[in-house]
Length: 202
Image (cartoon, rainbow, N blue to C red):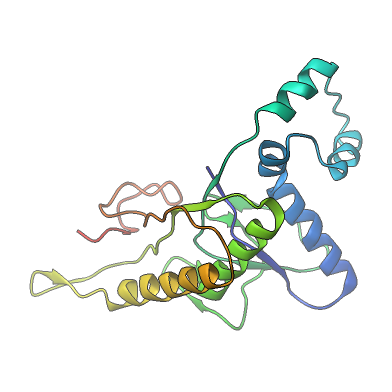
């Protein structure tokens, strides 16, 4: 399972567009191999430029080709944008670039993009043609207790919008085999390493 949130070019500068494509390819490298059964051609340049030499025999390639995955499980939390020349960086939520001025931002700086969820689902379906299962999708927030309750309409709205986007992706023809929200209970956040960033329903 991996985070496969989409990344947009920050401008229509062709260099930014191409760099964005390159970052996206790197993010999709593992599913490309697992679902197609071979190393995509773009990887060979990447390996060469980083002085990597993978020794394989024909039997290795046959094994890889014979045992591809039947579905793709992934997490989706947010999208971001890439500016020309911007260094690549990612965390548990996916790629980190420049904030998108067209999107709202959560308490912890993750942008809320339900249409990006539909876009990602369509992109992955078009690329792999296997059933998809988003196994992490949620919103971390600084919840405040009022009258012994947490009134998290913002979380309800986040979930509603993303489920609508999921339904629209199904109408687009995307094969969805399941969906799970992250998470019904709270944990120590892998991104901030504290309990303050709350995701859960209870």
